[in-house]
Length: 153
Image 1 (cartoon, helix red, strand yellow):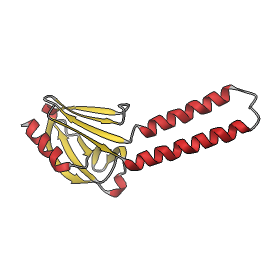
Image 2 (tube, helix red, strand yellow):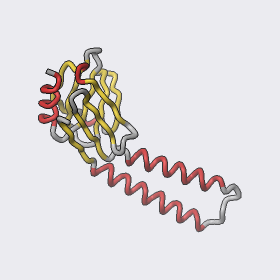
Image 3 (cartoon, helix red, strand yellow):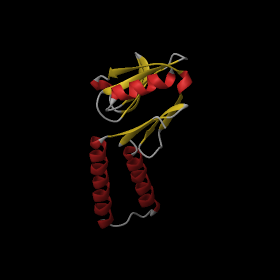
Image 4 (tube, rainbow, N blue to C red):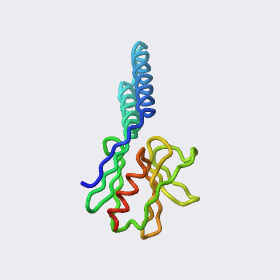
């Protein structure tokens, strides 16, 4: 392994904890009320709450791994991930994302690109042989850029 770095989004951790606390409070408050005639409704609501928490918590970190063959990115515990062949990468450069690009997985149509980010505005933009552009958010952009450039030469 040539490079491995995990960026943690403390804001998403706080948001996840706040939503979890809200769901627990809602569940406890609702259980004090008389039970609904359909007991399957409680199970459905609990399942939806659990699913929402799992999806939100998957964006609490972004791990970037570069080995001899691939550049890989993985959000949280791995529900959302992407893998790039190093041979397909033409260029890499450090960039600043605009505030309105947001966090998470984003698709922008002008300029046409995909953005993977969990915190901050620093990123490394990679261009592939097929013309596609991706931005990978990181809190150490220069180091990631240098590692990608060394790996693709």
